[in-house]
Image 1: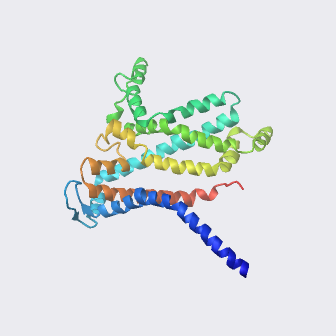
Image 2: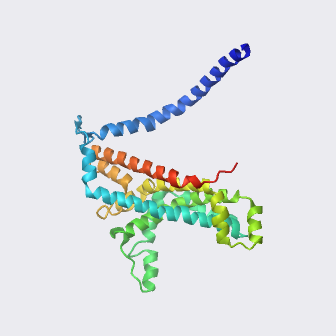
Image 3: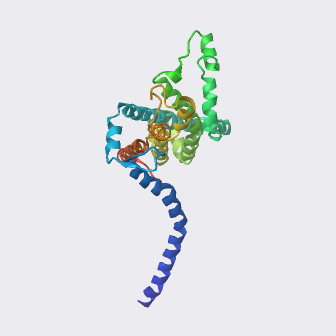
Length: 302
């Protein structure tokens, strides 16, 4: 009993040390996450243009206005399209690339890894400007080559559908390499003896990928899916801002850019805050669906 009493003050002392070490992180979270979130919720109940010294309380009217505005449904539809395209370009394709380079190819692996990861070092603003020149429908290299072949390049920045696809390609060019390296590291950690045994039994490469590689790297795959969903909501902001500013007629805008547009272009802070909260709710719902239906089959080693 006396030993237990002697140990207890030591444990309490160690706990206080741990809490003290957490204080800097808690302060940072409070300043840059909790307080902005609380203030955004607060602003969503007011009408304010960021210039007037007073705010007018309107209750849930901002939420009603956001939900009754047809353009916001178009913007949310664009957001889901961005997410779907980026899941294909930044999750499925990097998975296949990482599998082929690690398991199938025997030479020049270092070159391929470096070449694929290289765009991750380049600013997304620079990438947006570069792609704007390459895909210029009049004088860009792609338009010139298509002209030689007898095709006419569409004015994608003014065309519904095309503009979302091109902006997704620009974003994917930037973030593809990071997802590829993460997935490659996961696949590279799978036992090579297991894969070689399957190949000796003449198991097709596509079945090795689906039945061995995919399940055993699924924990990393889930992480990449979550990151890709975040990219669908956030990373596309830069090319939208640099190239289209949400046009034509909100055809390229997504939820994140629209909140910026409402606050800093139209000066409707309450609408922007309400849309931000609704976007966060949608993001939480997406994560809940992902955890409920996808993560159940995840393989965690050991």
